[in-house]
Length: 425
Image 1: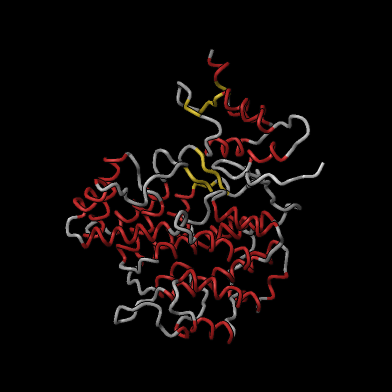
Image 2: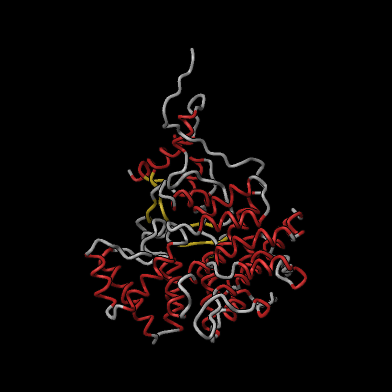
């Protein structure tokens, strides 16, 4: 009877006329249920889910607005083809390579070249460093009091106006533009998060932060005045694990903008605007504030329990795509425990993490891990979101480069629910 209930991966993919990576993407979105075979050496897929999805995808007569609207923007659809990132069986892969392995062994620049598909060229060489114009420097001084993401939103249009690489539409040309954007954002975020001797942020003379060919994570660590190589390694791992996460809200926004043939600066500006929302990357700001409040309470365990009894669940837990736990958070916690095993801040974080996991069954996600890094390193509360934004810029650029190859706009339809107009007969 199992053959009536389950299909192999090849059978399911053939039934839907899709590739195996697309099948795994459907599974990660919850559209098809998957479970191990009794022998445990492979996985099998629910036949009824495959049939249901096939029925949804096949046209049934002339298509109307009512036909197309149910396919619109709820969790799990639309599904767009992409060769960038796969989320399957509790793991995250960049072009088929485990992202947690890359976080352990690769540089940020190597991951960018991997996702941008330009491993035979280097968009980070000295000849391609961005030139900060007088207008850029003047604007940077004017917006230095804003938070790091808003500084990027203010400065990227100024940089775009003076960057001729935006007209080079070859793959190498777009990668060069991407490299310049990443360097600029690293400088902006580094300067915005620099801590002066009196504890204030964002007041360092920007001439002291000339853009160099240093690895991005090293440059950021120096700008943030982090004293150890181990701290810089934490930044490297975080940036890599934030690089992409399939078709999330900001990546979808970036692809929509790229589909209009906007340049890469515009794509990144759109991505930043979406990421900053409190239901997306901005969630890490809530986590950072929560950790600080728990630490100041003097008894983090009682603080968390009291807040939960009052009906407030701790932020930064749970990820629908990873029912067994976010592998990005697990990897960053492994790195934190290896580097800072005796730090009292780490013990506070682990107390909160373990208590919430026991009480709710939810495990920490990437937002909790990023805020934890900032908490342990003594960085401003915006540091987690800044790391998220800088790392995810790599993915937005990759999505844009991929989307530029498609000839059409991304244009879902809407189901009208307003007042019925009077239409003369």
